[in-house]
Structure formats: C-alpha cells, structure tokens
Amino acid sequence: MSLIKKYFSFLLLLTFLTAHSTSVITITGTQTIDEKTFNKSLKCKPVRIAKEMTILKVEGDCQGFWIVKKDQTIHDFSRNKSAIGTVLKKGTYYVYPHLKENRIVASVTISLH
Image (cartoon, rainbow, N blue to C red; front, side, top):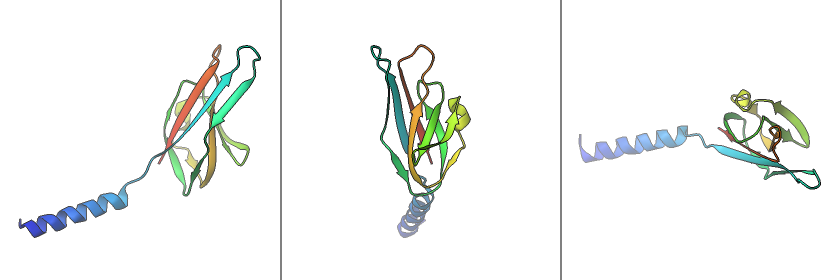
C-alpha cells in the first residue's frame, strides 16, 4: 500500500472515530450530617446537558440517590444500579445521595453518555 493510501486510510479512520465518539459527563453530589446539630447539608455542582443522555455508571458510598431538575425530584433510586439505563433529557441536573444507616457522609457520581 502506498504512503498516500495509508495516509488517507488513517484520516478516514480518524474522522470516523471522531464522528462516532461519545463524550461522558459526570455529576457528583454529597450529603453530610453535622454530628452536633444533626443538620443535613447537600452539595452538588449542577451540570447542564445539551442533549438527551443515558446513565452509564453509578459510583458512590450511598444507599441510592435522587436526581433534581428545575427544583423537582425527577428520579429517586433506592439502589445505585437500578439507575443504569435511565435517560435524562436536556437540561440542568443535580444529584444527591441517600445516607446509609448510621452514616454521616455519603457521595454519588453518575456518568452519562
């Protein structure tokens, strides 16, 4: 195969891979309880998605989690794995973990593609 054919084959392959690659977006949330006041604190940096995306993976030390969009809970999962495959439409999202029994800290990270 000539050098020119190899070069064009490489460019064609690179174009195909770039056009068909999917980016992965992650959203992370935490929940903590103050041991003195028992006040709960939720933290999550919101993530805006521009197109419909699917939950690919869920990681974290929690007993399930919930997803918020426009100040409303749109999904609430009691088990992390049950969320895999859930589709989120475009918009801005927050995720918050449910605490495990007798725990004061929980975290969750979901990966979307």
